[in-house]
Image 1 (tube, helix red, strand yellow):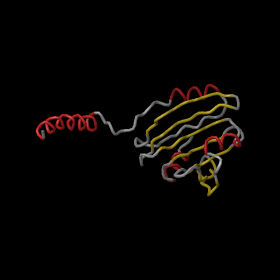
Image 2 (cartoon, rainbow, N blue to C red):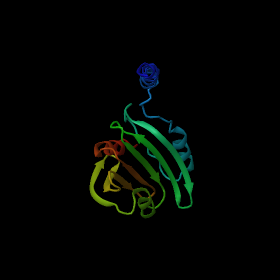
Image 3 (tube, helix red, strand yellow):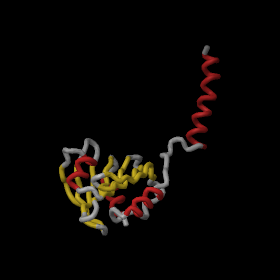
Image 4 (cartoon, rainbow, N blue to C red):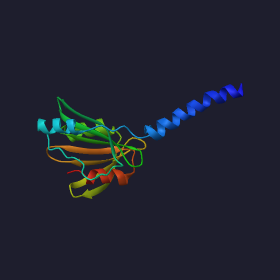
Length: 160
């Protein structure tokens, strides 16, 4: 019986090694955000900011643009270098409507962060998450996720 199990486990182990090493099975799935960004820019609902110079260790995992009654919203999901998730939201929806929808009802401001693109306000949101918010007259930008604050600030500062 042990010999039979050994015979079955060898091919399974080989397939697992092949999946992880050759096919990159542990790597995050990346998508191209170009179509969603182009759609948001053509809608002209708000000035679209795009990250620049993040590096190859950042992966775009989702991208969508949506128009609804209160306004338009662009969402770009990222996997940060620490393998944690970060969501970049840009919207023409009023901040008093957008922030509770994206961050939850129990947010509390805990600080600020200044970058070349503006003064960001930091919030503590759901357990394990924090957010940076840049509110302007024609759009609100939210960077929220489970990644370290350093990664959230790097994404926020890279927006051009």
